[in-house]
Length: 333
Image 1 (cartoon, rainbow, N blue to C red):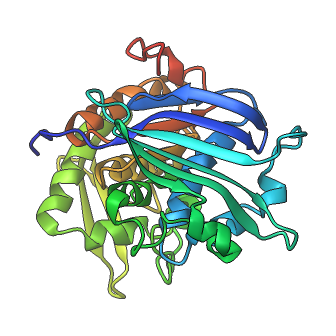
Image 2: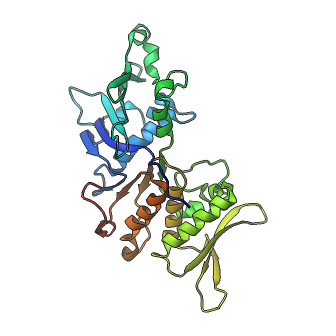
């Protein structure tokens, strides 16, 4: 696989007010970022900001649906919010050369019927405001403030790149037990818990699929040195399965399917596949689960090797101090 010649967009900065447990937070983000802290410190809540932006532009989502998915404005709003209770999100999107190629801001509350309503929507390119709401039309029709321009294809032409970028965000928290379910992929698409993980591999063009599996195999050797080969096959019912060939006392080695993989190995395979499958920001929850500490400390290196080829941003929440022992992690990450 050739190294990418251009770097995908990423989140470079985030500013949030009155979001869940944060009264206010402002963070610069690198292409790789690790969110560390004890339980209930807000790691998942911060990742949820990016999921929320994704849900606004996703099919069947929209502003109203995204807020409802989070439990409504009352559940989203920080309990410490007092005089100023609007929820505000501002993100900068760009790369190392142009950190603020785009700035998107949304500020909202709820009306008397507890419906989410916009207080502000703003899109900025360097030196130019593309969108400022509310505008005159909004002031004359309050119903317009129940939708963002971001989600409307007939209104976001001038900044559709922002909508497409938000749509490319992916959240993943693979549960091995779900991956192993025989009917895991039925009715599921982009399941954040891995229900359609093997189906996604199966639907990938063969040449691309095999190249990715070889790359995953190479990266996984740090954690599973006995692994010699990875391949996908379908059983008699057409259900896809992943199997690996392991070094064995027999010359020809031994094959194991995903139902025989350890939880940690299966989760790592899923996370690495996701890191290779797309260019948008990837949000990962606790990749260290079910892994030995000596393996956990190599996770940053694994993702870094993948990022050299994809350039995609990876944001990781973790409880593990072992994961942070990698000397290659910068202070700004």
